[in-house]
Length: 283
Image 1 (spheres, rainbow, N blue to C red):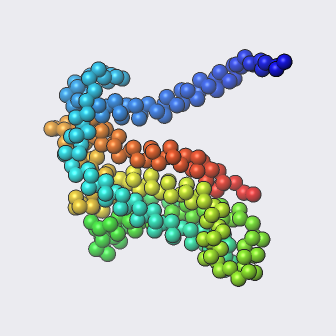
Image 2 (cartoon, rainbow, N blue to C red):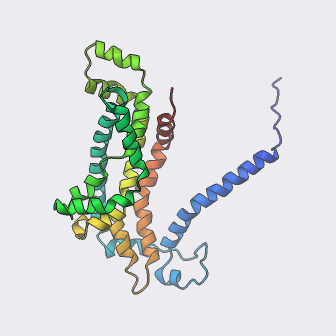
Image 3 (tube, rainbow, N blue to C red):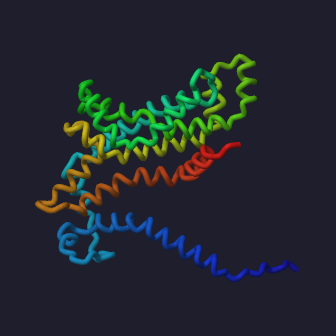
């Protein structure tokens, strides 16, 4: 006869653990719920609430139609897509070559230069905004895609992440490839990148999210609507409330804009976790 498994009673520790996890999940998911809830409230209903309600009996989609009719949000989507793909593609080529050089090539001062690059992570990005703005303006690249793209084509953190991941590939494999006459570029694309694929995918996804959510730099460097991104559109919708902020319409736009990122993360969430864990683990 088969032995029945006796279920162990839940211990106090496990109950507390589950309670904390549920509480944390509610804290994380509540802003998304509030965003969706606000997007289906009418403008008058939202502004008439002295005490915010956590549900609505009369949901409406008028805010979604209003968001797309007030500003050319579709055009901003296209601009954001161009900006995201171009920035991510150029950055990927730059950081892969830099990370490979520090991981596999020998040249004078390599460790010192890499330490200087890592030291740049301690400088807040806000401190270089003015320098970037002056440089892009002097080059005549305001209100251009190149002006949007160039300041974001490299990342110290992604270089470090890839370099550590590349360093985990056995040195013997590299030496064997060199003995067989394999060039460094061929070894990079035929061996290193396939082995480190999870980390590369992680970098791509994180950069896409970063570009898609970019706000400060696009607002600073563009004043021509032909180059506005979705972040510009959200701000325009927010200020279109007839003397008051149109929060419901803005939330509707944010819901639409967030959907591609949420779907992307859900599809590749395992790759992201795997890439980050491999990038920070030796051996």
